[in-house]
Image 1 (tube, helix red, strand yellow):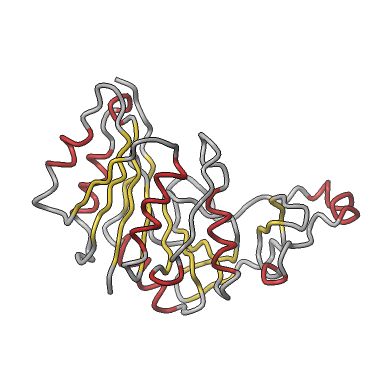
Image 2 (image 1 turned 180 degrees about the vertical axis):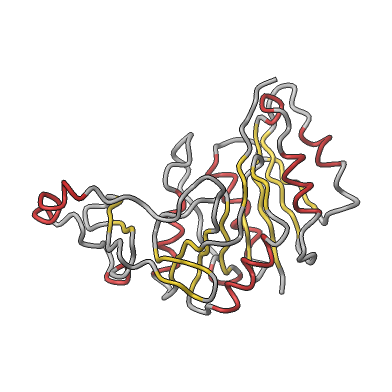
Length: 246
């Protein structure tokens, strides 16, 4: 099993080098056979590379320098590298994975052949979205809950045929073993994994925003078109740190 962990990072100097805590958590993973790809966009006075150097004897780690662009361009570097791996995980430079983070994501992929994207839980966030029931009659009249693709029919959160993020069926929360999960297009790169290799070959995000708005939705649609699904499950926890400017 070839496993890649992608970690985009930018402007750590202004936020206290939280990436050190992230890398420490990766050192302590129960699953050990993985490579880390840090996609680093330099910023003035930033010493991120000095922090990364502290871990070169503890992790199989590579740094890719991002010359320009924003978050999509950083993710595209990870997606290009993912072609050579079976499973790719992504997280943030201010996220702290639990010790079994990689192991739980890999096991979920092994257990579920037709699930292409897995989004783990983030401490302090709830599993699932919110449907505003008082708008339900209006949305039904407008076709708001009609998915853009029939394959999204059983999803709790969908992209509708108007291209908008919408609620599907909130009663589709299920359980597999000890984990609750749901089909959804709402996943986040701060705690995400996907089957890679040939499935991701040739896919790239369009570079058009500063704030990476909904780029994961495009990745979900890429997998759904290939007959796979996207889920959020109650496992593979990470904790997001509060960034504190020095």
